[in-house]
Image (cartoon, rainbow, N blue to C red; front, side):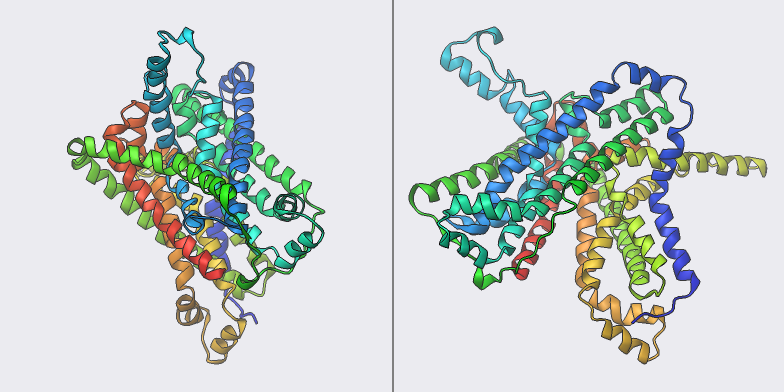
Length: 543
């Protein structure tokens, strides 16, 4: 049952949606303006390299993530072996590790002056780099491996869920037909999990396209670094907007192609219940191989970098435990908390309108507001700079026209713009969390509230919000963690003298001095573990 809404609610919904898509609109408009030949110069020189590197990077990261995540997901979901219960949640931990931190750790290990090559030279008696071949760590391939190690849990999580939900009766049917575990995986489990794998691959590709710190540290020129360099080195906001538009076209084309490729695929199956799970017991060499594979993956992607971070932090604790650390931690904390509350409030309002409005047009604001997460941080930064810079100038012109001194860049020169950027980027997470909780609220409760004479605001306050507590908490938590980790937008938009933990750590990584920022990096990692633990507990309850 639906309840008539005052026009004010619809206006509020469309206003919020317009605010969130404002950077995208501004970016498109700005990209059509002249740019004093800067973009023409880039187009004739380095732009093909930027595009080529971006596409190859996305391809290799997606392939690498699929290659390492799918076997791990199938082993954990379908096989019984030592350590399975631990790996089920532990393989999600790499998501909490910033990719540029992992990149620094492995570069330090495998570079020419690192312990690995040093040990090889000592053992074989090699004297110079010409005496042997060792793969270049700072390369497109190296960046692909680092990103795959951090991003594979996206595919692992979705694939594991897909494998566990597959009907046990189908798996048993393959056994009757003489298929062993390998044939059952190849002919049944993998094709049925394709939609989940496609969604996971799209998420990995989008995160790869949005990455700035890792490719910047490895000196791999991509569209992300091109946007940053064009804005800071050439000072051309229009050229940066044109590059950002190309980047968005690449992302949208990739997602569109994936959906077009499986447009006719339909999947119907009876989902498996916990008691029906068909588990293959592994023993002997097979069990050892499964445990070794999952253990090696967890060690390389999380444990080894985290242990090295702990060593750095312990060795440089007296230097890291200073006023700057507390100041930047406070900056990250208050911005993340504020953005979390704003995003959840936006999610509640938009989903409430969608829930009870009789107008189909009121569904549109929540969908529009969910597009912000598709904008990479650098693209979002350029998109939000365009309107807010003009608004700043307009405010100063108006104040000076009235005979007063202009206030300066009160929007783009303060932390206000970072809060706006984070809100636009992460509102989709809160909207999704609130939407999932709304699906569990029976429409009959709305009818009961209406019968008791509750108005829309009363229905939201006394009926919906108490029942949305789990979704609200999850939304707050997930947005908070994303804000703590977000680097590109903060790096581009931070006012002079403002730092948070992410920009603080990245400065040390860029200067080859992560040891001094290891304590701050550990804080980011530990905070990032909280939603992963919460997510795993939720999945265990659902299964």
